[in-house]
Length: 180
Image 1 (cartoon, rainbow, N blue to C red):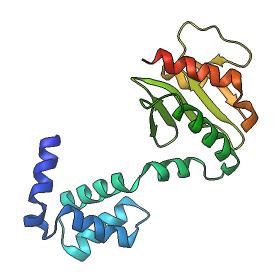
Image 2: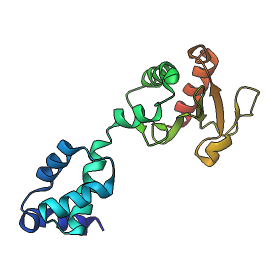
Image 3: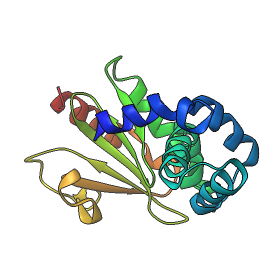
């Protein structure tokens, strides 16, 4: 599949008259709300075939979803949680140079050699923090993984910056060390 996509990208200037980057630049200026609107624009206004138009729009969207955009979108209507998120990120970034923060559509994975923390704005007033702590018993605060399923072994519900205390930081550090 990747080879076919690369071939399509390589043939794009000859078949459509512009390179992928040139098409991305055109689409960026238009800022379409829907995928189909952008595809139809390329087909009608530029005579691009459906296959090329769909590929151009898809690859443009991937680029437009920067890490900051993904995180910002998660917290729309949940802005009160942003200071908690920022505190959690500042804590894990201090664990070591081998920490990778990977925003996704609805959560942020924190990875060492494998994911050890998952940050998810669960409601307008709560972040669910998933931890990978195999064989650690649950407590009132350190609950079972809940909606995280097998991605995490435990979940802590956080409603204020004060909840990011020494106990929670200790669990995050333990999960980091286990992810080695």
